[in-house]
Image (cartoon, each protein chain N blue to C red):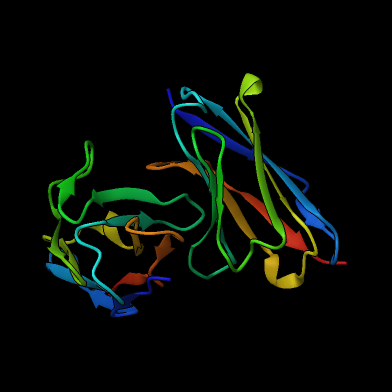
Length: 107
Length: 111
């Protein structure tokens, strides 16, 4: 199984700061990585697909990069609504796997 | 409009079988794969398995011996059955046609 390691586990930031969240795969997965945001008691929402492809309706402050084993989700100027948990997910091979998440919290 | 909605018993006794239904609208089950994902309270997401558009199934090896996914295309419904439930199976269970997810249904395993 492909293991996705997200770091940091928790990120404390002030609104307006820009942040980068990391996701590292245990083997090369090309660009088959997707990023989700999950707020409390809600279903995950897709933010970025295939490492860097934008999703309709998602604010442009969210962007993704990376290929192979190292991937990054960047949030330019964090807003109050962005404080939640972020997961990466790989679709390179079965079983599909998710990272353990990064919690973005208000400092 | 794409919608998925999970339904199920809410409470299951240990060692019993869980049966959940995912009702889909806005999509044909013969065109897309339907996945089941679960999330224990306060923890991360675990992919359980999927039923492909052609009807074949794939399972997470960690659950394969206990899990079965099937469907009724005429009713636009997908079914999950998992036996020998234990307390660690307590979780929110989601069905999804990525990137679309249902709201989830909470299943508690307790006597």
